[in-house]
Length: 142
Image (cartoon, rainbow, N blue to C red; front, side, top):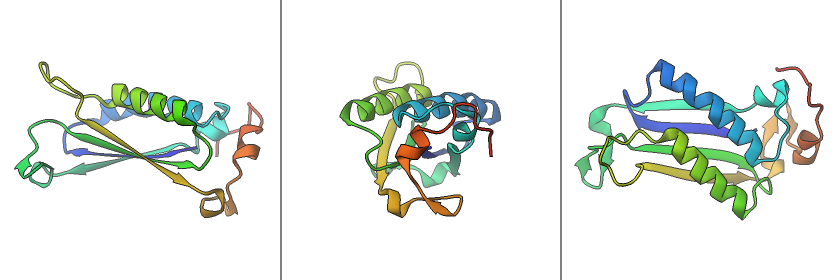
């Protein structure tokens, strides 16, 4: 049940793009943490799009000339091993890549924040990754 915050210059993702991005990121997010893709757990993966004015995004000391994207992901500590983190970075980068033709690399940064279970609240209780992983595959959405 990761929380995903996508930072980008305004216009990088229109409404249709956001819809196309949210689904694959949700599926990838559940896979990252080895959580069942139940309707309930799918509904706990929240994706936020934070847009910034064109004059508020810089590459070094110059205005950004590419649609740079930063994805901040908050996950429960212990939910990802090193291989899972690599898959997360690769998969999320592919989903969020908006580089123009000819750009050599995808201007996407991925930052993973691991949060201890005792520091993560969900529905008024502390998170329990083991219980989430064992939850019913048909649990209804919140």
